[in-house]
Image (tube, rainbow, N blue to C red; front, side):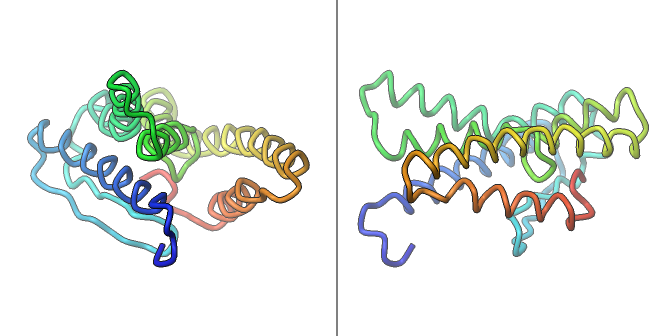
Length: 174
């Protein structure tokens, strides 16, 4: 980030800040008593102190609100004719976080929905199977991109990282 002269890193950081602020804003709108922000090696996590006492449908909405705001911001900027790096970063961040992987907002929302029908153990198992399928598709796209371009291995590296998280991160859904 220190050596990025294009401004792409700043756009991505701003999009991420808006994303996380959207989660916090909706928690506050639902009269949440507070949040804790945990910066870990693997991710930035917002811990909602009231999620266990809030109805599941509100928790699903909170989980998806970050991606919703990023995607909506992309379309708002596009409709205003402002189609640049910041808009693209918002779209990419919103779509990627909506993917049903355990460490992502889409995975959290899917877990909450599964938990309303199944036990916690079954919900985690189903989410992991879905995550492996999603990762297999992402690996296919990553290999296609790497072969087509001959140099772009970014998605392949991200897939490897997400696979490691899937195997080693125990509290993937809470």
